Length: 181
Image (tube, rainbow, N blue to C red):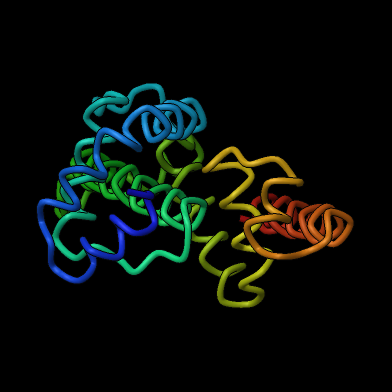
């Protein structure tokens, strides 16, 4: 049975179908998780395997409707990014005393951690997705899923030229947003 069919059955409530999906996508999700961890803080205690498992747990709660394999990997990548963001938020909250006022926090703002950079990237990407869903999706597919321009073009039914142009514009927009932050 094809992955798309299994995902559709899982979306419709068949837990056995989701159990059959896991071995089919595990290696690719591990590759995506490793890629995301390399882009994220090296100090994150969440290992690649833990990231994949946490993503599976979140996806299994409400299996999304997926058009195809690429769409599923895009959704899984977004879920992994959210797991990493949640982890970064909790570490940043712990560093700040979990809401307790500390007069030194403002003084330490000049020292930006990798978690803060990752969180800033997440916020900028959310703004890009709201402003231009296509550009945001292309950034996710390229840098979080690891698809090439050709693979992204196939997944989104666009020309490779359009994908490359929109991706360049999206990267420039993100660079400008992150420098302003």
